[in-house]
Length: 259
Image (cartoon, rainbow, N blue to C red; front, top):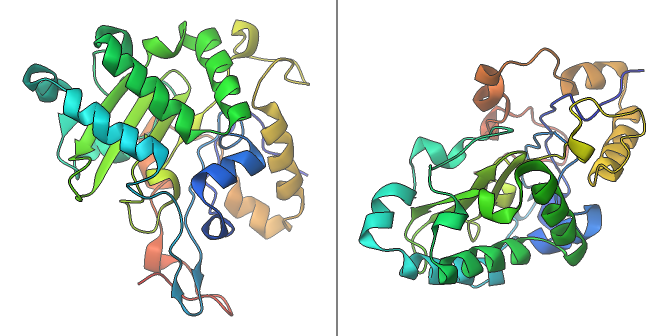
């Protein structure tokens, strides 16, 4: 039976996300999906209509985004701020700079606010794991990059996106209809600096999630496994694979399509 490992990417639709908030979800499974996997996390639509769940503009991470946005200078705005529907907002890769300036290039107040946003995106355990992963993979949190889409704090859709080696993470106040976590996320860990890890993935801070994903994968029948497992993927496939299916999803008994 094939298993998902930390070097294979899989697009996953989550039918359980609607019943929990972002923070509760990451407290349950850690701070995100299994190592080096790209999860597609949609929400379930109950029989009585769309569920009203997830973070809001008044959540801790989102209010910190609004405060961060107010500190951005006109010069910085030209480089790190974009319209909400800019293509960069929905991009996800395993190692990329959404903008050239790093967090280390920002003013101390802005660096502290980015750290506050990051901390409030995660469970306490997840935050510590991310800090370990970022230190190992890139030299620390300050080596990562952030961009802002839309206008936080104005009541309009917005999103704060962090990228870098093994990370694409988002804070959006539930601005993206039908998507958990603001859209596709990615994270992994090159434990001990090794591209090819040992069979037990020793020291990989996310491998416990990989083990849980494998348990779920084993519950699928052969046809389901064939649909879930994506092999020989190229970088050009990324956007197609993580695209939300919406009304294209097959209708199942007891399930209503979004909209």
